[in-house]
Amino acid sequence: MLDILPSAKLEPLSRVSPSRFTSLQLCPLREIWAANNKPRLLPLHPAAQLGTALHKFIELGMCGKIRNEQDMISCWETACGTVEQEMQNNSLEKHLVPLSLSANNYEVKKIMAFNIVRDFFNNGLRADKTDKSKKQESEVWLQTNDGKIGGIIDLIKHTQKGIVITDYKTGSIIDSLSEHGIIKQEYQQQLKFYAALYFTVYGVWPVSLTIEGLDKQEYDIPFSKEECLGLLQDATKLMDELNELIGSGLSCEDFARPSARTCSFCLYRPACKRYWEQKSSSDEWPADICGRIKEKKILGNGLFRIVVENGESTIAIRGLSLERHNFLSGEVNNVMFCNLGHDATHGFFVEKQLTTGYQL
Image (cartoon, rainbow, N blue to C red; front, top):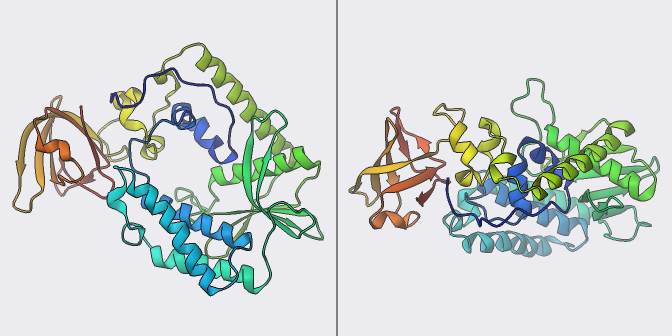
């Protein structure tokens, strides 16, 4: 739909990450594009950007780089500043800087992360990255012998009972769509991958898999050895099958698996023809539109209001910022807008925090 991604032939996958296996199953195209380093076409949500900064900050604490309160402040500024600088350099995300204004619960999550790191240096819970004689190791890279499956484990604890693998999550851990407070499936699979990888590398099974949130609450992930090894086999098989299909010269569309929920989180959907063919106007699907501009004018507040014809539908969008959509200042016929917000009346939309526009 949008000719913005390089049209070069897709390259085979070199590795499958435990944290991305679920997404690879849901829509191979999204993960193939990401693995091929295609540029994101929609901005990453500020919550995810903040999560990156929080995770890096906690990592510094686990590694013993933070020894006092002053170190905490300095390391937080470094972790958050690095993420914000990358956002500032991205035309899709620079308006979301600073994160203290764009990310919900910024201060609350910052305080919670500070409390976690404070425990590390107050209670002697620092982890070493490489020395397995220590009680804890942080940021440990593990992979299968063939290198096809690999990932970084946040924390490995050596206890009297055995190995405990812990993964830190800075967002919601419970699946919001589950009725019984079930931990997200992708998180459960990720920890089971880590268990299998640890066994593959060291020949020992962990005795416990845990996820820890910013609130310090720990969630145990039940697992069986057979299930964990089965996941490794499934991931390897899927990777080999996809690489064979990529090598056969199939088009990008052949790897797409559009669905309302999957596409809602996809940052490549503006370029996905299958998505545009299958999406509907129901609220379950993202509020994305494309079509020909029928009317365009600047309102008294300096923002644009446009009317777009899309087949038999006429759609109005107001509140469009020229700073974020500078192509509106020139002669433009066909446009695409993604991540719109629903206005009070059906068929009317408004610009939101993540709204992104393209001239077609």
